[in-house]
Length: 106
Image (cartoon, rainbow, N blue to C red; front, side, top):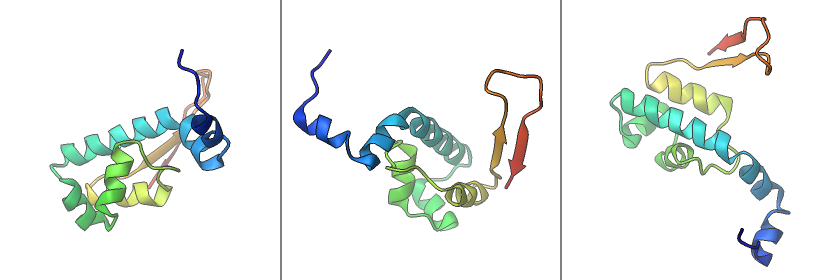
């Protein structure tokens, strides 16, 4: 296992860096989903920028999982609508309980 450098150790004390590090997998999955929806819609990042008014740089960072704090819900709604989709957010029991997930469709 590689030893942590002094720079890396100091960076992990920065709340923004720590947040990104802790949520890297979530942001990568979300970015992959946004890219998949964009590609399935036949849109380039530039076309999605035009339709959503979200900058191409932000779209690129989101798709690569490199947004420091991740996108807002409103950003996801704008991107979904720009591709002719809607955003659906759900919450369900973490342990696979029998209750149905609660969904919000935006």
